[in-house]
Length: 66
Image 1 (tube, rainbow, N blue to C red):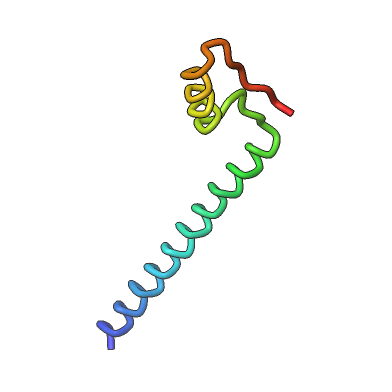
Image 2: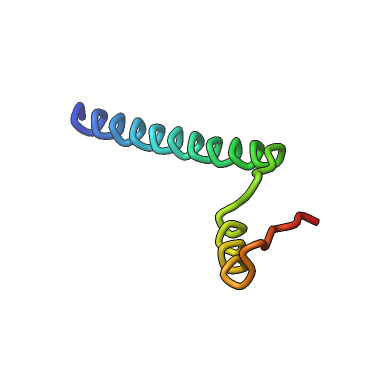
């Protein structure tokens, strides 16, 4: 009986630990979404790539935000 109880405790602790890790991961994602809602980046990787393509044709090309 002791072995079954011990196995049950290990199982419950494992499930609890996984649940806590899942909640922490979701919180991390949520905080990133909230941060990017208020922090406007000056440029993104996509914008930088597009600007490089435009500058191949016109070295004076600039990106404009609308």
